[in-house]
Image (cartoon, rainbow, N blue to C red; front, side):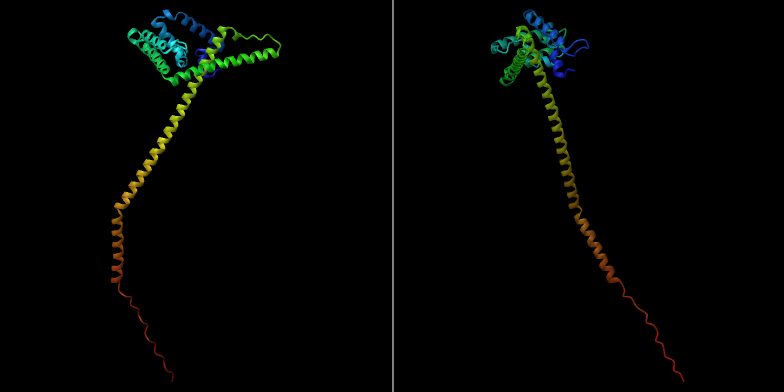
Amino acid sequence: MMNEAEMAAAGGEPSAQSGPDDLFNHFYTEVKQIEKRDSVLTSKQQIVRLLRPGSSYFNLNPFEVLQIDPEATDEELKKRFRALSILVHPDKNQDDPDRAQLAFEAVDKAYKNLLDPEQKKRAVDVIQAGREYVEHNMKEKKKQLKKDGKPQFVEEDDPEMFRQAVYKQTMKLFAELEIKRKERDAKDMHERKRAREEEIETAEKAKREREWQKNFEETRDGRVDSWRSFQAGKSKAKKEKKPRSFLKPPKVKMEQRE
């Protein structure tokens, strides 16, 4: 079974009849067809591309969102953003403003990420890691073919197949990083919630102790007065108590015998 990242890289939910490679190849072909006719894409086509199934993962790659090469200059990036943002702007798509707004936000987010040197470097590093992963696999496959005495040719030797493999691996890496980020965020949120609950409990405990101490101080004089009154009452009762009288038995006269 595919994990979430593999499903994202494959283009959405896998069907019972199609494997991950079939799904990916279908989607990759569709993407390349879109890229080839990019210059004549309509606003609606761009919105469909940006909101296609699995877009929450596909759009993690800002270069893919803007359909621009990682080596593009800042000026080329700026021009591309302007052209694409105009195409998908809600004002230009008043018949579908909600979807247009979502598409525009995806474009805007990708552009802002690439304006941030750190975010741009991260995206470039992910793409480079995808390429290196594919190149490493190619070498390992060729080593095995050589060991088996077979021709050292793999399908990735075809430039188009190599691009597909890099594209697929890159999307998987972006998806995996996003999943890990969400897991960290969920963990951090849980820790912050737990810390906040402990903070509230500590504050309430301190408040209860202050209130107890305040009540203790406020009632101390009353308790002292009550004790003094009690002691005074005991002393008075002791003084007023009469001494006990004891009855003496009568003297017995001895009888004299004659």
